[in-house]
Length: 208
Image (cartoon, rainbow, N blue to C red; front, side):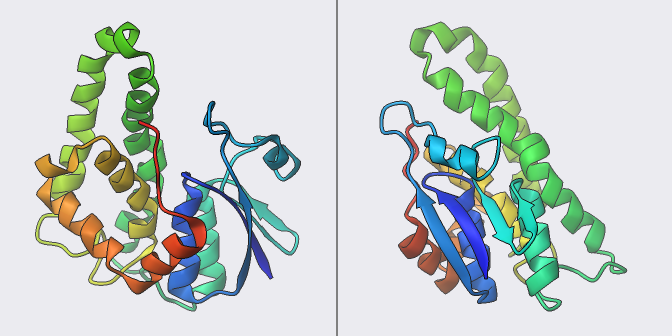
């Protein structure tokens, strides 16, 4: 059985959601961040050298990067669901969103998170970070214009992977400026599988 090593308030939550959407049997091993430092516990180092989450173990396969985890689970267990056919017009867009989430969109969001913790010392960096946030959230907003999902007319791994971007934008109070992104995240939150994932993995409680 597939095992998910799950850390609270982390990218791992979207893997719980994916597994619930697909109805894949899995075991979840939970880890808690330190309440003061917000760091992952050292026990995760025994699972993967980076001590990060998500990590899945499926037989001899161990994967730590969330985009790769989403891709693997859908290919291995999706039975053709939640990804476009490889020879379809939508596949390259789907693949791009899988990479864009962590490769581009999350950088200014994480910078905003860390620099905000510096209080006044981080003030000189905020104009540049705010500019990058507006650039990327504006791009995502435009991509969702007139669409229910990022790719095609049904939920795919692109939506799963992009969900953490939406969650972080919400945590920073940015969503009102991006109504398409806000409406999309609300639709994702309304899905029964998403609700189950929160019940099992815990709601996001970002310390912003």
